[in-house]
Length: 101
Figure 1 (cartoon, rainbow, N blue to C red):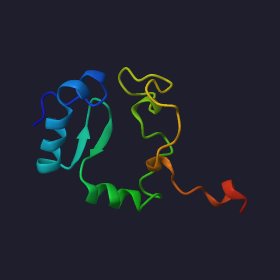
Figure 2 (cartoon, rainbow, N blue to C red):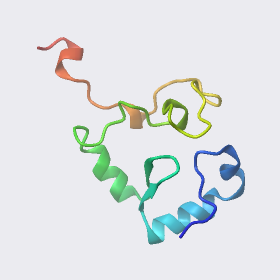
Figure 3 (cartoon, rainbow, N blue to C red):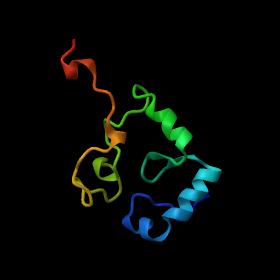
């Protein structure tokens, strides 16, 4: 059980992230973070599996904390990025979005 796991807070990344993510990789690699309402995938195998199933698992609603408006304390715009999409956010576009029918 993680007691100090709060990946939706900035202080988490300066105080506890390495230890917490190491714990999750070993004990609970697909972890439901109830306060934030999202899943944390911490091992390559699970991340790879999810990334291969864009119809089941989508980044359309956001992937970065600042993109998810229901997050506790989330900003509406990125504060530490240039706003560019990461490779994890590049779901295949629906056919209609690229000129098909």
